[in-house]
Image (cartoon, rainbow, N blue to C red; front, side, top):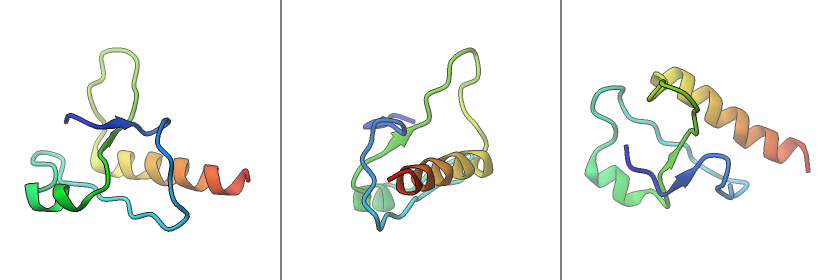
Amino acid sequence: MKADAKLTEIEFSEKSAIVLGSEHEGISRLIRKKCDETVSIPMPGPIESFNVATSAAIAMYEYRRRFTLR
């Protein structure tokens, strides 16, 4: 997936929605148009992507980490 930014670089608002698509087809064009930005999870090495459950866990952890450490 082409993304606007990396998960570690974006600014979350306190009220954010995290939208995830299916592992094979992603999110639809219409849903993507409603999103403020698309993000990717930076990963070194040969792994190209995580499954959707793992991606969701990483994104929610990053969101929670930012608002807990304030």
